[in-house]
Length: 252
Image (cartoon, rainbow, N blue to C red; front, side, top):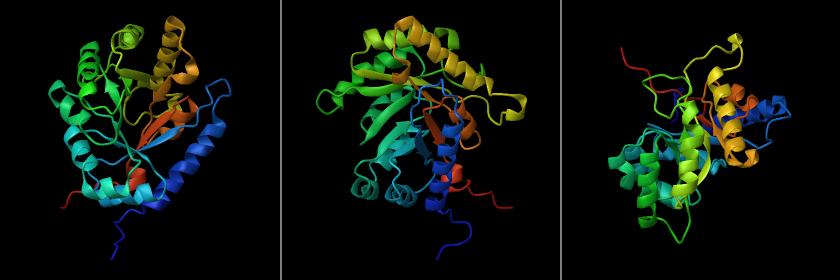
């Protein structure tokens, strides 16, 4: 029997998707008109809830930890019921976990390439795991808030690192830029500077490397600010708690 604590995944998904649609309508017409992708962040949530979201049409799921992604991606229930699931890795990737991540079934993209060295390692290891000649989609992570606790390259290095991936990593498919940004930014202060920085990084990288802006995605925005992120140009938003319910409160 379900308790009041059980999240209603279907209602959560519907609410988020309708808010995404409304945010798209408010978006500046000058921005690339790419329909935003919703990544449902399923960390610490059980396989059954992922299956439920999948059955309501959700296909993209995000995980912050390699071990958790690898475990869920290989879960028999998910393998059986979620044939077209796409896993997004959105956490900090250490070199010693690369093989475990790349070996996960249905890995779709690594959103957190934060150095040329990591790009190199992914490029070298991916052929061992890929089917046929498909490339591994990646995003370059930018530390837009200059917080030491956050990973990512400095905005000024964007062109250099993206160019490195494009020229030296033939097994990787550069898809765009990603940021985490500062938590709990107060939008009454004006547009989130971290999101504006990511938009600017894309502008610069497209001009410097002659890339089509419509082909360079922006992954930014989470449960508290995804609508604002879309208004500023996000093409991927990463939303967890408003779909799956908040993390359980600690018992007194």
